[in-house]
Figure 1 (cartoon, rainbow, N blue to C red):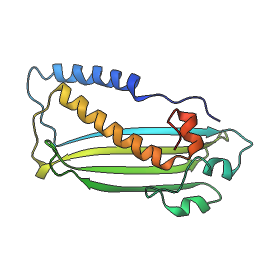
Figure 2: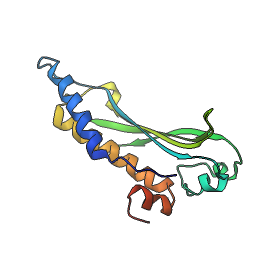
Figure 3: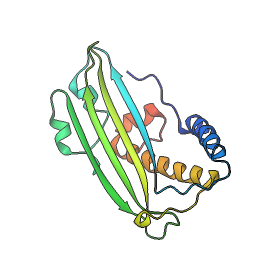
Amino acid sequence: MFSGYTDWAPISRSAYHYLNSALLSTGGLQLAPTSLAVKISDQFIWKPPYSVEDIRSCLKSSPYLSESLFSQAGLWHSHHGFFTELPGHKRWARRLDVLEVGVIEPADEPRILTVNMMHKFVARHGIATAVNRESLAEDFDALHAVHTAIFKDILSGDMHVRVGFQPV
């Protein structure tokens, strides 16, 4: 079932390379975004034979997941989001976190547990603050840290070991 997990470090290096290129293409203009987001998709794939219990055992009860997920027998999908206020943050007023979890079955028969998360910083009253490459990198790293915390909170202890997190 499990073939490996890609860490943030190699992905972020590529992302920052492209981000730096984009910043350089502005010709020295300052960027002042009113929001900044990252979407991270994780998939866990089972080939037959598999059971609903196998798939369900990847997740654990969490404030981020609906309890009804654990009683579904077939394919299912859950999508919700929540805001976190960020008082005192120098650039951002709040963060929107959207969590989409589901089990899908493509035409070629494997079952796929998908965990998609989007994390978005939103500026205060739509007022943008100038950013540079370093501050954007800090913000993306902060969004990834939120992703990791939520991901750890929804995955079972066995999955922590499989993806390389310390067991909880």
